[in-house]
Length: 145
Length: 185
Image (tube, rainbow over all chains, first blue to last red; front, side, top):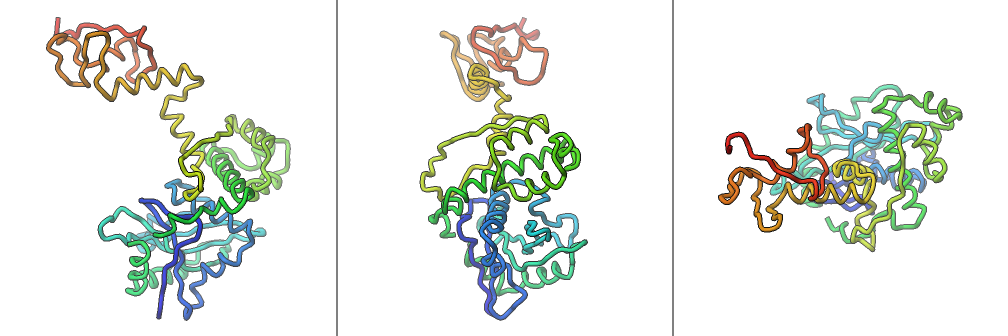
């Protein structure tokens, strides 16, 4: 399937980090960009602020986090926000797409979800399957490399 | 990435920029609440508002006012400042500098309370990072040799000799004195 990784408009990047959406017209589950594009302006700014925060090297479990203590999911990442009382999530993965600059870290956002009580690890399993696809790895390298 | 040539999202309009400023402030408030720690219920009690009002502000800070900034800061025992700065990015391609960067720089500068304290800090930093001269007496960096004044191992030795603390202390040139080191007597 044709995958592409496209930058989040308006947040830029820096020598340390970059952020982008994964897109695939044939895969409906990959909907992070579609959901983001359809957010109300206020919610979009909430998320963009979180992207800025992560890109700037800040830490805040309330706004985003990974699972560094779970070996199986340590490449997965999530941005979180509240919208009309619902806990919304954009799940994605972290990667190092630059061969000559391994310290550079990118976050590729894949899918949207509404969290209930606990994290649905089947979503992280899906992220793990997608992130290792050669076409996805190649697409990330094309954008960030 | 070609995005470095595009404008940052906060350049769209003043509401967008203000939203980001408000987000920065709330991020600091939540970090402080976590470090104290203090719950939303307790913060609401201190502010004499409902917990719902606190929750609403933390999740929807776009209508933050200066008065609210003052109230929330003081309720947590901290203070807030409005900082205008020139980061050499007039087109705003890179976005605002996060408030935490300013706070961290201020803390690393020794939390100066006024211009004199800041000057003292600058003086301290300049002498601990390079070669300096007082009058015609040259001093090398820490660990260097000085054949003319061998008992002066470094200016840093002198700078901290009047302090009982191992931490760097602010000082001015007029307060500097030096002592012979025991092995040089």
